[in-house]
Image (tube, rainbow, N blue to C red; front, side, top):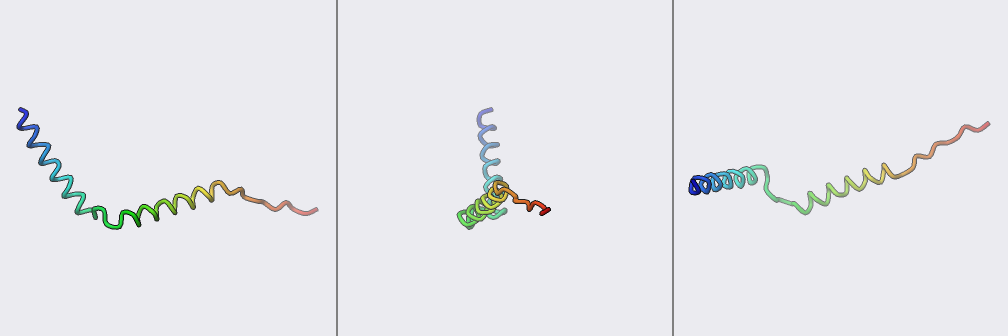
Length: 58
């Protein structure tokens, strides 16, 4: 039974690695991460910035 579990685990690992490579792998991971962080930071800054409304003059 242990051998069957081991074989299933090896097959699952091979399938996972193959799927990872097909989806692009880690190409430009640093660049992609930097872009995502910049977008997230920009969104957070927009949320934090108070919206100033002009009051009507009388």
